[in-house]
Length: 149
Image (cartoon, rainbow, N blue to C red; front, side):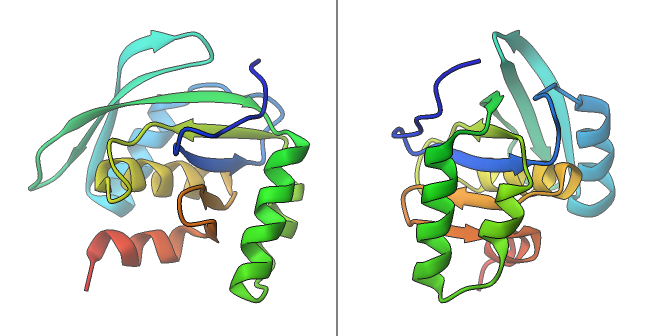
């Protein structure tokens, strides 16, 4: 596994799993059922892969994901994000997560990356941390962001 730094802007999804393993079938099933999105493996990579994210009615795209053990600095950042939001309990949920997924994004408004983060979070039962905005949120908030104003 890699060190727990995430200084490159990738979305971080906390996972209540003991190991970060690609579960493409479960992610695709969840994506199809609840997000109108197909998820497939385009290329396996060390500790992750490049995934195809194909929302119905929108252009598909590729995003890389990387799984690793959760680090102490991940928890510090989750605590800071929650304190900034005035509470909510998601940092406590992050503490119960043993692994994290880092999701590549091409911009801070990358809806494919956010959609993938929401799908993963709904399967691995953990919150999403946005390092660019220092925001921690759950699937419901992710869905609202995807649907827009």
